[in-house]
Length: 201
Image (cartoon, rainbow, N blue to C red; front, side, top):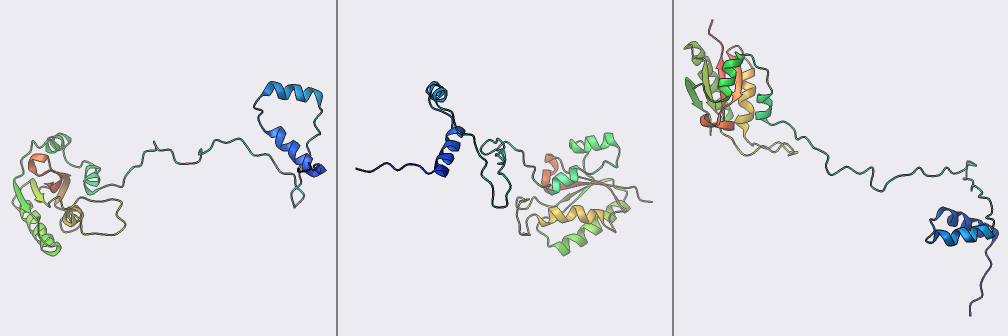
């Protein structure tokens, strides 16, 4: 048979603190017990540096975790950047262009070319088209493999689709190009670009 050991004063004090912070299972019984006994006053246990310990502020479990319903916005693709460009041509003509109502007067297919060959062919095509007085031309880049905006490594996915819009904004083509936009589905969709040219001077 085990003998019951009496609690030391510091153990008794610790037990009283724990008992006061707990929620009772049967509040009525606790109330009756509290009426008969007077609890000893709580003493704040000092820290090693002499300061009293502050009570924890109330919190909910998991409140600092990221909400599952939080919307994550993916990085822009090449098509998104083109659609976000300011409109420099006539707005009515641009609306008709986006709806595929304007027919390109000439086209070039760069699909399958190397970067060097495609760059030279694009330069010749755009400058010759402007010299002939053409206004709307179609540049077919091909869709390439689907772009992965989260891919940490640079991979050759849709290289022409990414490069051609940049070439059109650089010299010698920048002075000839007024507007670029993704083509309508009837003219190739995301695999092609409308290029609206300035009038030759």
